Structures are given as C-alpha cells and as structure tokens.
Amino acid sequence: MSFFQWAQNPWGQEILVRISWDLFWLALIGGALFVIGHLVWRTKHKEAAPAEAPPEKAAAIPERILRHSLGSRFFHWSMSIAVFVLLVTGFFPVVGIQFDWITIHWIAGIALIGTVVFHVFHATFWLGLKNIWVGSADWKEFRQGLANALGSGPAPPKPGKYPVEQRLFHHMVSLASFGVILTGLLMMVRVENPIFTRNPYLLADSTWGWVYVLHGLSAVGLVGMIIAHVYFAILPEKRWMTMSMIAGWITKKDYLAHHDPDRWVVTEEAKNP
Amino acid sequence: MAVIHDTIEAFELFQPASLEDALALRRRYGKVSWAYAGGLDSLDWFKDRIKRPEVVIDLGGVAELKGVRESGDRIEIGALTTLTEIATSEAIRSKYSVLSEAASQVATPQIRNQSSLGGNLSQDTRCWYYRGGWPCYRAGGNICYADTPTSVNREHAIFEAKRCVAVNPSDTAPALIALDAQFVIHGPGGERVVDAEDYFITPATDIQRMTILGPSDLLTAIRIPGTWAGARFHFEKSRDRQAWDFALVNVASAMKLSGNTIDDVRIVVNAVGPRPMRLRDVERQLKGQTATADVAEAAGELAVLGARPLQHNAYKIPLMRNLVRRAIRGEA
Image (cartoon, rainbow over all chains, first blue to last red; front, side, top):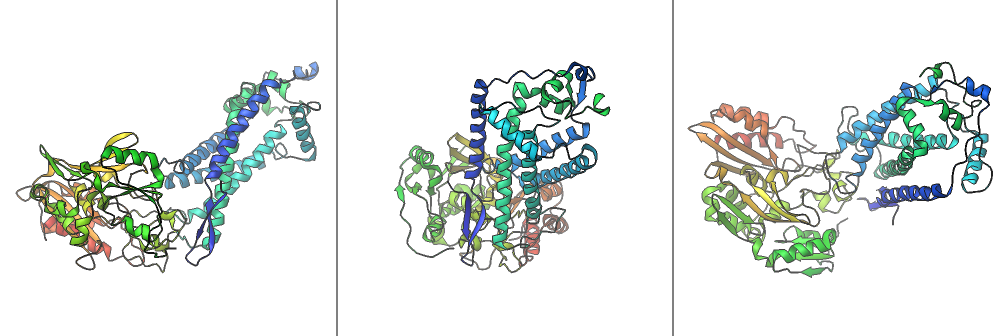
C-alpha cells in the first residue's frame, strides 16, 4: 500500500501527483470496519434507561419541539446532494466507471460552496455558534462517554441540543469540506469553466501536487465520515434524530429522553415547529 | 522520462492459435497483459520502456481475426487484417472505397503490410510529450505538457480537448464511422457490438484511454453494413509529407445523391480532437441541399464552429474548413 503517487517531472525532480487510490479503499474498508465494530459493540452494550425529567419541567414541554429549522434542513439536504454527486463523480472513475465527470463535478462543487456559505451565515447570525462550540468541559464529557462505552465509568450527563460527538463530527466534516472547497477552487483554474480563466500554470507542478494531495485527503476523509454518518442515521435508536432532519421536530418523549432541558432550553420559537 | 534502450524489457509471451485461447489469456492476465497485433504501436512503447507489460499476447496466429468476409450485403473484416489487404481488397474497393483509400494512405507500404486494421483503430495518441514518457494527465499525472504557452502543439487538438490536448491519429477510423460500421468486441461479459463512433472516447470520459477497450477486451472484427455501399465517397488526408506521416487533419465522407441533391450524408474528421469527430450539424444542414460550391462553403464554416486552437495549431481551422468543403464538392 502506498499513500501518495509520485512522478518525475521533465526536470528530473520527484514530484507529488496525488494521493494513492489505496487511501480511498482504506477509507471504505475503515468505514466498513467501524460499522461492523459498532454493530458488535451494540449487541453487547444496552443503553441504560434515561433518567426521568422532573415532572414540573416535563409539564412545560410541548408535544413537539423544533430541532432543525427549515433553513438548517435545507442546508443539510442540499449539502448532502452536492457531496453525494461530488463523491460519485470523483470516485466512480477511480473504481473504473468512466463517464464525462468533470463538468458535473465542478458544478456540484459550486453548489457545495453555495450551501456552505449559506450555512456559515445562517449559523452565525440565526442559529448561534455556541450550540456547536466544543469547550474543555465538552472534552471531559466526550472522554467520559468514551470510557462509559468501553465499560468503565458512569454515563455522561445528557447533552444540550447537540451531543459532543455530533459537534466533533460537524467540525471534522467542516474541516474536510473546507479542504475540498479551497483546493477544488484552485483546481477549477485548470479546467474549462465560465467562472475562472483557465490557467493550468498558476502554480508550479510540485505545488499542484500538494493541492491534489490535500483535495484527495479531504475527499477520502469525507468518504469515511459519511459512511459513519449514514450508518448512525439508519440505526433504529437514532432514527428519531434522522426524522428530525426531515420533519424538523422531535417529540417531547425523545426530547426528555435524550436532552437535558437545562442545557437545551426550548424557546418559544421551538415550541411551534 | 523516456530512455531509448532499443532493447525490450522481459515479458512472458503467449502466442494463442485460436480466438478462444486469446480471450482466455486476456481474461486471465487483464491489466498486466498487452494485446499485440502488428506491433507498430506496441514496439515503440516497449523499446522506450514506457509501457512494461508482464504478458504479451501475440495475436498473429489467430486465423479467426484475419481476412475480409462478405456476408449478404455486409462485409466483416477481422481486426488483424492488414491495411494492405484492406487497401487492395476488391470487395472493399468496389463498395466502400473510402476505407480502401484511407487504408492506402496510412504511413508506408512496409508499415501497411505489417499493421492491422484493429491496431490502426486502437493505437494510442502520438503526442510526443506523452510518448516521451512525461508524467502528463494521460500517463497518470496531473498536467498537460502540450498545452503550455511554450509547448510544441502544432499537431494537437482544436476540439474536445479537456485537460489533455492529444488527438486521435487514425486514418481508417473516420472512414469506418462514415460507413456506419460496427465494431465487435469480446470481453469478460462476452461479445458486444458497438457503433464505430462509440468506440472512441475523449479525455472527459477517461483521460488514459482513447477507446472503450478495457484491459480484458479484444477488438475482434469490424462489420460494415450495406447501407452506404456504392455511395459517393471522399477521403482526404492532409499531412506534412506524402508518406510515413500522421494526418494533420483528415476527412472521410459518404454521400447519397439524387442527381445533385444530397439525400443523406455522413462526414467525419480526425486528428482535430481526441476522437474522430462526426459533423452531425453539417450533415443535418446538407440533407436536401444541392451539392454546390456555395453549400460546401457554408458547410465548411459550420464545421469549424467551436474550434479552439492552441498556441501553434490555428492553421487546422482553415485546413479542416477546406477539407470539409472539398469533401462536399467531391474534389480529389
């Protein structure tokens, strides 16, 4: 197995070309192993019944609570479609399914940028960044949750709106997305498109090699993360969360079972999904 | 980078005597195998040690792959039939002279005696940056050395260049597309028959191949239907010297006329893009028209719409325009 593809340029220098496609297979196999490992762990680890919320708090909670606004759902699904198209157009040719992929790929890339820009504004000015922030206390909870999953230590406290592992996943996806976006924008300069004047010689060949490598690493990173994401989305015990990404709301029962009302205070707006 | 060794790296040689054995070998060795027909393309690659197959399957002993067979109103040509046989076959000359004309203009008599129709159709591009072993897109890299401001790209593409600007060098390919031929391919999934124009692909689809042939596939035969038999044909190849040279632009056409009115027409040019290019817009424009100089003039203009020259090959635009005009006027 190799990590990178190298070549000798006309000046006799060894230059990076791109990542080795072995890494794509590694991401697929790694994702599959994670799923299998989690399925095995899941059969042995029964989730403890959630602690009951105080009756006076439960009484104040409506039957439906808005978890994802229309804007958030729009972002999630439009980004999903864009990423799906990007992965199919990017990796199908690698596995031998050949088609005219470049134009579809960069158009999907532009769509991804559009969704991310929308999300950055939406999250900054409407959703609030604190919901997604990971602080030192969150790390402590994360370690506690991990230890609990491995069979030692008590369960961590119920989270606010987003569990810490979900927030960490968000940040890893963000990192990979910014990786593919920034390198992808540069790579667009090398192909015909109506946005940039084509200039394949903007960077030296060795620098282009690094751009390709970062693009590839970010992309295979997304492959592994998306396998895990889709897997959790279809797990029966997580389906309430998946459904909330479709309908927008969760039930009072799920809210009280999975969230701490003190850490995720239901606003007036969230009471009317 | 290419180093001319003039000695070939060792490989395992198989010389199957039947198509069945050849296909079995192809299936068995797939990517590490090389189907060797006339050897005109293969030996350059081997000697420069740019292509280093572990296994070479010499198809020379497979009788089923050779010869011109007439069946009803159609002709089937084995992929290993030499270009000399095609150029001199009475059956082809009498009904499909555009193909015999194209075959007779390939390289030199010695090369035509040795090279096969399948090889001429499936040969790799002649871009010297790629052939020189530079790590370009087509060789698996991430750059096209023929498309820089200082590249020598006089022979390269003016159409359909996506990242790679190499052109398809075949002379017989445009003739076969003009004849609405079909190519018979044998692969792991059995036999499949594709239209001639669908056999060729652009870098947009796969930047490392020029045809749809996969590593376990073999082009076994070319079938020419009777549809265009006896039509008015035209083949013209423009090149720097009159022998042993690849086309700068070539054109093949088949035209059915009622008097001087064009009932149906197929026009194909090659060496202007990564695949032989059928001029469908021109064909549509021509149908029902009278084959006059004015109509040919307009068709020539239409043919080159969308051409995008590189630094040194803008001359291909007027060249192609004039070749298309001459094809319609039927000028030799």
